Amino acid sequence: MLELRAITAGYDRRTPVVRDVSLTVEPGEAVGLLGPSGCGKSTLARVAALLHRPDSGTLILDGTPVRHWRHRAPRELRTACGVVFQQPRLSADPRLRLDDLIAEPLRATGRRTEAPGRVAELAATVGLTPDLLSRRPHEVSDGQLQRACLARALVLRPRRLICDEMTSMLDASTAAALVAVVEDYRRTTGAGLLAVGHDRTLLRRWCDRTVHWDDLARGGGPIPRV
Ligand SMILES: Nc1ncnc2c1ncn2[C@@H]1O[C@H](COP(=O)(O)OP(=O)(O)OP(=O)(O)O)[C@@H](O)[C@H]1O
Image (cartoon, rainbow, N blue to C red; front, side):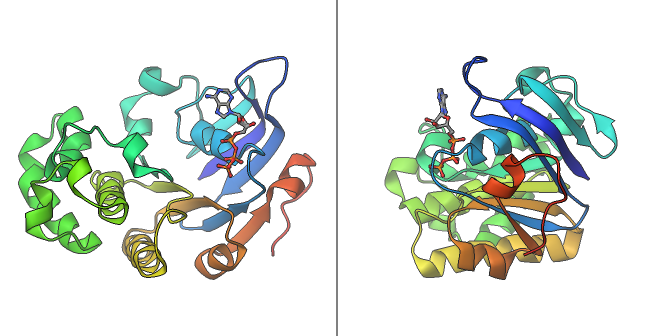
């Protein structure tokens, strides 16, 4: 379970962009987070993904309060969460071939021997043909690169997924294909999902419940089921 309790976070302590926000994702649950541009959704998602230390508040993962973020976070907490961002080009090392990009978390955790099998399996799952796997990011489309980034997020079989506007740069059919991959993964593993976005229709169709930033930012009260 992912619990964000009274999180205040931002880039300048005097003017936080996230103020006293609480949100819970139960095991196996898919929660959609909607809100206007710039309100702080990505910042909150980054706190949940252990990528951004909050100024105050508590993040509790499977009952354990988190004390360290980024490279100081314990490996078992970092690897339990797969993250996909909006812009694949900002989150992909331009020097890596797609097969190495997908395998990156395996190499980083000393499991490189699993890479060939896992990469082949996930490439098929996300719809990347073998010829694409030897290309570098500048040699593929945004949609193909986002498919590789989703495969990378799944490669360690995380218990939680955070998809921050994963589909907003993609055409409708690629978006639908990637959402289907996430849903298949959740069905087979019981992983929880926090999906951040602007597209109310997509999030309502995709998620068990959708919460609006304005309701979270009011602070404290129960999160309405929509
Ligand atoms: N690294 C940063 N340094 C300083 N300010 C930042 C940084 N990243 C984001 N911000 C600011 O924090 C605020 C919240 O940004 P955030 O990306 O969390 O919003 P968002 O709700 O995800 O927006 P969008 O829907 O447009 O992606 C914005 O005003 C943004 O300009």
